[in-house]
Structures are given as structure tokens and as C-alpha cells.
Amino acid sequence: MGMVQEFKEFAMRGNVVDLAVGVVIGGAFGKIVSSVVADVIMPPIGLLMGGVDFSDLKIVMKEAVGEVPAVTLNYGSFIQTCVDFIIIAFAIFMLIKALNSMQRKKEEAPAAPPPPPAQEVLLTEIRDLLKNR
Image 1 (tube, rainbow, N blue to C red):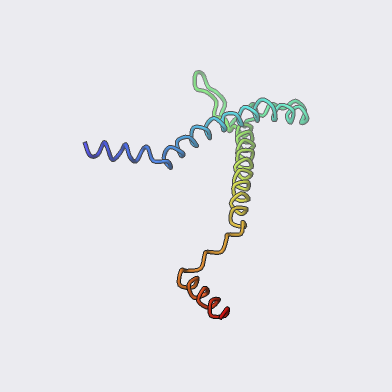
Image 2 (image 1 turned 120 degrees about the vertical axis):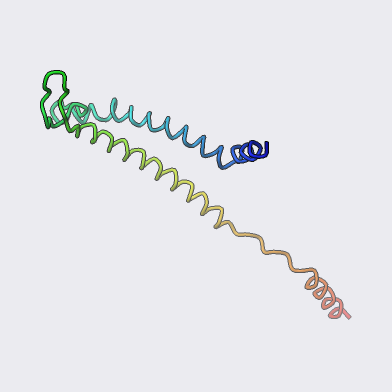
């Protein structure tokens, strides 16, 4: 029973739960970016390049024979995946940049000087009393 309890404590730590949420959101974000690239960005780029559909760009290395499919090098799909990566990397860069600037603002905030130790306060009071005599 100890191992189950230990695993439960590990799984319910804040870092593990945050990581799980990040992975789920990251997966969904990746799908959204892939859709934006494939359905919104690449069609106009293909149109500007003379009606090219990037998902169909490929080099046939070996023609299909009978029921054996053709061997192709799908470089259009690779280009689309590279655009996905660039967009995701830029979004992550902007997020990290925002987090870093927030962190710097916290560090730049001037901290109040620590209060003097009790001995120093007492000595200051004694000095002031002696001055007044």
C-alpha cells in the first residue's frame, strides 16, 4: 500500500499536474497551428505561386507497379510541417519573452531595507538619550 500512496503523492504534486496540463494544451495548440497552416496560410501562398497545392508536392522515386504503391518523397508536406514548427516556435518564444519580462519586473522592484537588529535599535536609543542629557 505504501507504493500506491507514494505514487499518489507524486502524481498530485503541482509540477506534475502543471506538466500534464501543458502537454494537453500544447497538443491542442499544435493541432490548431497545423490547421491554420494547412487551411489558411498555405492555400494563398500556393495560389501566389501559380496554384500549387503544397500537400501534393512530391518526387516520385519509383512508380507504382500493380498493387504496390509508388515510392514518393513528399517535400510539400515537409514544407508545411516546417511552417507549423516556425509558428509554434515563435509563439513559444513570445510566451517565454513575456514571462521573462514579468520576472525582471519582479526583480527590479526595490526591496525595502531589512529592519536593523534589536541591538542596533537599543544602542541608537541609548545614544539619543545620552545626547539629550
